[in-house]
Image 1 (spheres, rainbow, N blue to C red):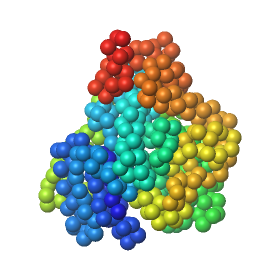
Image 2 (image 1 turned 180 degrees about the vertical axis):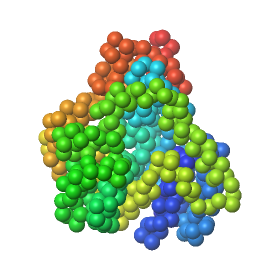
Image 3 (image 1 turned 90 degrees about the horizontal axis):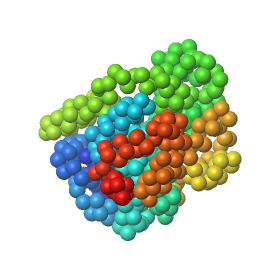
Length: 434
């Protein structure tokens, strides 16, 4: 079994390698191929990954390549975790928002749009190469914005089995269990299931069961009594009492917009700049040939439970387990009241055929409007990315509640296209004034 990681030079990669080391008993992996266009980073991260596997007496090889087609050929699984433009592009996304007095963030608002416009054409190229070189391989996408990228895949590469994945649902589940443990309820994670519905980074958690028994009232009581024990964001009691749900912590950008916008005034450092410093330390650690165990500082990078999510999903697919995982996949009738062609983040059975979303009741009116608005933005952004459609960008920013004022949209677009000139060839005619 050959598994390919596109973006293998990421500082996240050792976390993923650790996951595959831990699943050797059930996953017959023979080759983990790390592919990256940055040969220097790939050599550092890949060399560390190879030492990890050797130290753990792993029974698979770690191979390295800068050639994408070579990597994809004959793959059983393709995992995407790349960042077009690197961390510097993320920094530009953040400061793009700040320059125009709106939210500057990696996946939310105008920053998320810029990242999607850079990413979608590349992910569709990968899907086309998979059709030729690995037609039976599922594409498991961690690349942000994960839900929006998966929406593009299901629309423009429907013949590829594609599943979008995020570690936030797993982080949330584990933090809920940690919080319950402080209140005397201690269980193994596999006995608990989280009821989540929405879009990636725009979801609401509305239930937790342990061995099938509902414990949501204990969760909400515990969260309000001791929010630090649950570490799920700074939610005020009135909001939680009104919703009777816990919002994904990225929803702070929507519910507390002005507070989050004001926090940008304290930059630098932005989050991207913080991560740049963390990555320099990680790469120096990885480059030291005496090191073969991931450092504790890797958790500061933001990849908690990444290896768990990735390897459990691959294992469930390969071994046809039917396990339930929270993923990004087509609605396809799971929420009857919502359009079938929406990619949602929700629990799904995973088997050899892919992800099968579980039937779910729709979210209430007080949050559905935001879901519908952001999905409209996502669909428009996909069209803009695929077709180089400037009008679709305008419409998407007009729809997005974190976008600029209507009479300032053109200034934001001009700035976005200028900053990302090297990464948006589909808009070259507009950038050249044609």
